[in-house]
Amino acid sequence: AASERLEAIGAAHSLPPAAMRELRELLREEQPVFGASHVQRLRDMWGISASFSLPLLPELARAADAGVPSFVSQSEGEAAGVYRQLAAALEGELERLDAAPRPEILYLPVERRIVIALADGTQQSITPLELRRLCRSP
Image (tube, rainbow, N blue to C red):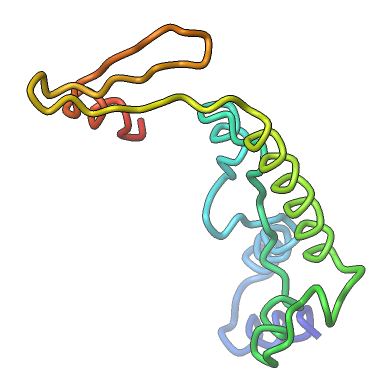
């Protein structure tokens, strides 16, 4: 159906054979709508293992339009598989966070410093301004 539409558009606009070949070749390649994925870079930079790339699939749009979650309407589809991976990774992250010792964080208004007391007995401190500068994404 799509190839027939392409041929009809080419004929309607009198596209030369070379242009039609280039268009057919272009349409055979995957075209990332939003550019290259940055999921791995974000995982590496922030240490967040529960980062996923959800493909833009026609069945997702149809399910959303119908008001039915795609993992219900297409429980074995690609998107449902990504949702299952995401849920498992999130569950693992939450278990690790729950088991991890938590630091104690204090704000000292007179010194204008944030002090972090770590579980191993060490302390770190930072000013709010320094913290803000460090939190900006590269």
